[in-house]
Image (cartoon, rainbow, N blue to C red):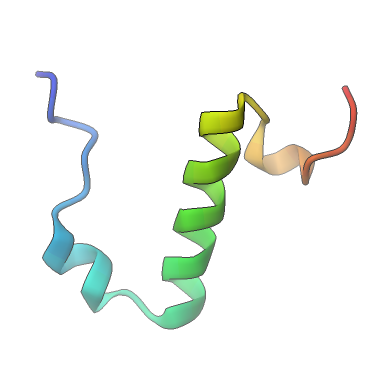
Length: 43
């Protein structure tokens, strides 16, 4: 399903600030094509 991997807004709000920030950083890294586990280092 196209929307299957999209997290509902209320779930994101229920996460702690650190978890929300981590999810946001992972999303940004994914948009840049960077592996979140790579911490932005050159591959």
